[in-house]
Each structure stands twice: as C-alpha cells, then as structure tokens.
Length: 481
Image (cartoon, rainbow, N blue to C red; front, side, top):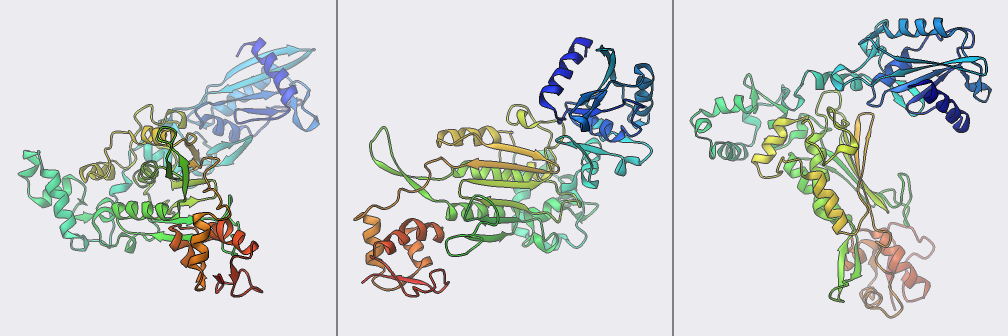
C-alpha cells in the first residue's frame, strides 16, 4: 500500500478499534515482536492474505505509539519472513505521522498448492496456523493433511478396505454396474471383468476399495461404522431445545447402507418430518399444499454431501449430519471446500473433485449427472418455492448447507368449527395417543400437532386428557365426550 493508504488505515483503526480477519496490530514501540510466525502463517494460509500494522498499542485503547526504529523493524520483519516455509515476501510501507513512524507489512495469500505456510523452526504440523476472526489458531492435523491431499492429489475414495473382499460385495449390483460401464464402450467391453475392476478402481492390486464398498457392499458400515448420516428433527431453533412433551428430538435416525440407499432413506426422513403449509394459488384461486422445502433441492444438497465429503482416515469417524429445526434445515459434511474454489464461486465455476471415482460411478448409475449443476439447481428450486437463497458455510474442515423456511411456513391454526378441529374431536371419541392423532392428520411432528391443534381444543374444553395431572406423560391420551 502507499503511505496515504496506510494513513487512511490508521484512521480506520482508530474508528473501529479492533483487529479483524485480515488485520493484526503490534505495538513495536521498543522492539520488533519476536513471534510474528503465527500471524505470518495464518495470513499466508488464507486467500485474502492480511496486513500487520506496527506502532499501535492495542491494550491502551489503540494508542498510536509509533515504532522504535522504522529501518531496523523492516529488517527484523524480513528475517522472520525468511524463516517461514515457503518463504514470505512481504510488502512493507513506512509512514511518518505526528513525528512518529508506523510500518505496515502486507502478507500475500499463498496459492492452495503451496499451503500450508509454516514456521520452519516448528515444522509443518506444529508451525501451521489459520486465521479465525482476529485470532491465530493452530491448524489441526487434518487441516494440514487437507492441503497435502489436494497438492498430491490423494484419492481417499479408493483407499483399500482390508477386511472387505470381492465376495463380500453384492454380485448382482456389481454386475449391473459393470454392464452399464461397458455400454457404448467397445474397448472396455472386450476386457475381462477382473481387468475392469482394476481399471475402474473397484479393486486396487486385487484389494477392494472404499468406493466399491460404499456402492456395492450389502452393509458398508460393517467396515466404516461412521460413514453414515445422522438425521435429527429438533423441536426448536437450536440444539437442546425441549419440545411440548419434553422431547429433545421429534425424530432421530442413524441412516446406513450404500450411498444410493442412504440418499433414498434421508429423503424419506425429510419428507416424513416436513410440514405442509396451505397456500392459495394466485393464478387458480385454489388452496394447495406446499412442503417446507422443495425435495429436489434437499436431494441435491444431500447428494453433494455424500459425493464431496472427505473420506480420508482423518474423518472416517465423522458422519454426515442432517438437522431439521423449526426454521431451517442444515446439512453438514466433514471436509471443507476442496481445492481452489471459494464459497462465492459455487455454481459459477467448475470445482476440483475430491472423490472422482465415486462421482463417476454415481453418474454411471444415473444417480447424479456429474455436470456441476447441483448448486444452480438448489438455488433455482428454492427460488421457485418462494424461499430465501441457500447459505453455504465453509468452516475449518466442515461444509454446511442451510435452507430457511418461509416466514409464514407453518400451517394456519385451526379456527373454531374448522374441518380439522371437527375431525380431531370426532377421532378422539376413543382415547387417542399423540402418535395416533399425528398419523391421522398425516403429519410427522407430534409436537407440532399437539401445540397447534390439540392444546387449543383442550383449552376450549372440547378435548380432555386421560392423565390431567401429568400433561407431558408419554402415556397421555386425548378424548372427547
């Protein structure tokens, strides 16, 4: 930056009085800080890089104290930059203001293939840092590995699964896949099956790969128990919320099986736990039922999580999670964005592929197009459904997709004398449980049914409790006279 730009930055610091993701402040009134390594590493390991400003006493209300010696401090900064791996070439600027000198060091962000930048005196694992807000945090071993995996093009989706064997795979499913592979490929079709297995990474050196286990094993979780999906429906807007009847989860399932089976099961889970809202079609004037979320968008988000999650040994103990809250749905997978792509580029540029064998196999099986159309499809489906744009969060080894409900997404409450109210009263002429009433109405959430429909009827005296002294009892039933 120029001296004028540094002068403006100093004004901004006095106005905001804080550090940031790209700004670090150092006093340096008497000497150059001896430990710049953490910040040098963290700024180098983010796309935007960052700037260190010397001559600000943060702990004394950001007083402009100036540096002890502008020439010597530049020399000391460079010396520390040369102890980083790769070596850092800072852009240094000096400004004189009110008879005091200030120095800024702009640290450029390294290309992904050159990361992580680390202090050579500590080594790659202990000397690598990442910027979190205004703090320099040590990188986890997995974060360091992620950069190495991209640089060296590791393919964790075809790592060997020692306990699996060809005989343990579902022969019918595998044969069907081989048939699809051969279709329209005469050169491939002429090869024996065992050669195709090796060529298409079903096996490596005659050992079964993770990809083939996840696609063709009758029960993949026998080998990798946590490569599954934990699906939860939560009665509130945050984890730990308690429902009307004291429950922490409206629904809670561990979804297992092959990738196609998990995809189908989690879609069923979402359908079961979504509510329908009644709307009036502006064109026809007719009442229509509309789900909280478009199922096509949900499918694409879950498929992205299954295809693009990290399958390395570092994350094989971490399942994908799907959490349905009162106001949103969150789908999170281990492994942040892969390669050079940024969140703001999703759906606009072709990304690097973390698991090319799994992605290609699912394309062959007609489960995904593998044309990078998932994000645009999600955005368009949500827009057509009248919902906000999705939120994508890439944060320290996890990627999360968030869909938000429409603000008026709840079903209108039943009015006195409505069909729903009359149906519940009639249905409860025989004492009924919460589950029976919810099933009768075709709604997955018992908590929602009790809060929205049954409790108002109880308050009106139209419905009574079989256990009035224990309203939240799991044995509670409701009846009408």
